[in-house]
Image 1: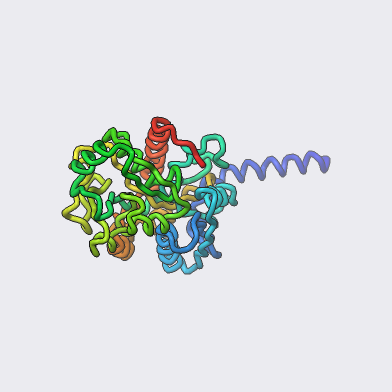
Image 2: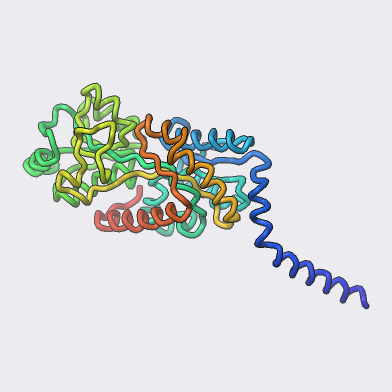
Length: 330
């Protein structure tokens, strides 16, 4: 048999055997995964809530697998720099990323300027936790509840201002939901970071704001800020006397920021499932559940399919809020 024909047949046989073996190879890889360090990208500088949860996840994975999970902080670009690094990495399971609500807000906010496709370029691993926002006012604001706040806002149209970490941020969209649902004229003041917002809020330079319960709880407990309502479906354990917006008659103010893990699209499903199961079991009823709850987060520990559904629902919801409010990215 001529050499060229033998070579052709050999390559063809190898391809056929490779295709037949492919379904069995992914579980085999998952069984030994990870056998070297994994990089976990966080799209914020150190210290942010998303960074804290990313480090918790990384520590748990390292303990479970006996391999380092190296945290890589890639802040900037409204989180797109860090998430793009995940989307464009090798889909072998050795690069994963932590995301939050900016991940589902950016498609509606940035449109064609987004450097990846949120729904196609990632493999959701698990929704780790949520952390509802609480709306707080400076003590000088003469409103003890949402009804009196709305009455005050209508009486002083445009006089009340709220700060956020920037245009299109979760706190901004929470305020936009309030504006649309209550039909009030309030002024949005965008900042370039959450820390400055709270400095000005505590000083009375802005009158109200939204942020996660873990972030604002110390100020509420100390009486420096007054909590009016939470954005979750149920009241939160740390603020049992604070009603939900739904209880206050505004069910459309319903943002509950997500914190979850994703991998680049194309990672073997068996590896995604392994990462999800390892994290999810502890988040639902183990050590991570306790740690998250203590910090004011609501532990979830979802499956990949459940997280994908949440991502798709949030992308659609925020696109509608952004379009209705005429919100444009900076």
